[in-house]
Length: 110
Image 1: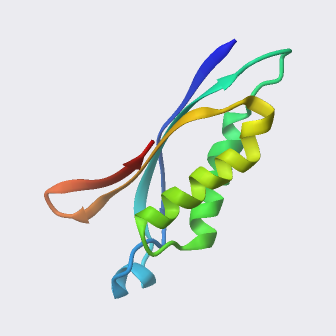
Image 2 (image 1 turned 180 degrees about the vertical axis):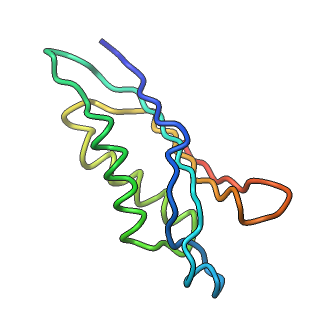
């Protein structure tokens, strides 16, 4: 059966950005992710482990660009989950809600 997983507003602080103060001070990010996958034979996708892994990757890699983070996460999802769960239609967003005073900056890809 075809399912769609949504992880919304996964929030934590990490080093991300190219400016000097962004390389020294962790800042809040929000991750939003969705993708379709095939559920069968009671093999389920552990979304708690997936959310923790996304956070761990972001903390460890300390990406300079949002684009680098999205590309890396998308490749990771495809390599880890595509064959077992037949994931497709990955939609990923990384937001920096506090980087500018009057808006939330978000980068997304499909």
